[in-house]
Every structure is written in structure tokens, then in C-alpha cells.
Length: 194
Image 1 (cartoon, rainbow, N blue to C red):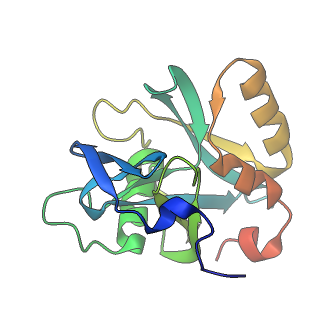
Image 2: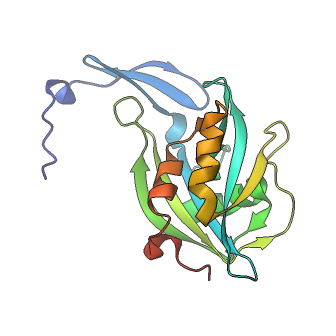
């Protein structure tokens, strides 16, 4: 594994073509891509709770996404450091805030599972994948005013079925759902909620 760039454009200067409040359009040689403005990052949260009978359920969110023109099924996620003066916000702090806002569940603590890139040929943005532990439902969730988030609590054993029916209905499915589905039996990622 080498960090030496093999693309001839890698050594060319990066040029900002347009910058908004949340994203920046850039070019480097023949490459066109976007990234988050102002150093904003993102956190995505895997949140699983357990029923008294032992059934493990994953918390998912549904939200209309304007760029797709569709309702999208996602794991809870949100921006880190997007508020003015919040540039130094800790990943764990943002993940706890976003989980509570979107789903109505509060976590005792967050486990950092690493940094991931969802579409590295077009977007420079990464997200920190977090695993929520010690969940307590404190509200109905739904996000901030205007987000209109709908929360789904899906048994892990029925996740593949749920996603298939969602896709069959013509809705969008976020790429992070693939991470969750692929890891549905991996105890290191989805072990019992502590």
C-alpha cells in the first residue's frame, strides 16, 4: 500500500470554483469534486437497542432529500462543527446531539468506529462512524423544525427485508445502510448494547 499519488493531476493546485455555507465546489486538473466548507465534518451513528425479549432493533431515519428528489432511508447522521463558533466540536458530542435530535434516543456514550468516505471520486467529505451505547428513549425525535424526520425502529433480523421493501417502493437508500447490513452479524460492531 502506497500513499504515492499515481494520478498525474494529484500534484496540481486545487482551485475553489464556488463556495456556499455548507459545500465547496473544487477542481484539480481534470477532476471536479465537492467538499464541506469551513472544515465541517459529519458523524453517522449506528444505534441499536434491545427489547426485554432480547430482540435487537436498529434505529433508522427517513427524510426527504432534495438532491435526490426522493425520501431516503438512513442511519442517524449530522454535521460536526457546522454552527458558528463550533468548529472544534468533538465528534462524540455532535453524534450524541444528532442522535437525540433525530431519533429521540439519548446515548450514555459513543464508540468511534473510524473515518469513512462515501463517494471518493466525487466528494472529499468523510464521515466518522459512531456506535451508540446505553440508549434511553427521551422523546419522539423528528429532528429540528423543518427536517420532518420519521424514525423507524427495525429488528435487526428483518433489516434486509425492510430495506428491500423500501427500495421496491422507489425510495432512496443511503450507502451507509450497506455498512449496517453487511455487519448485521458482526459482534464487534453490533454487539450487545452496554
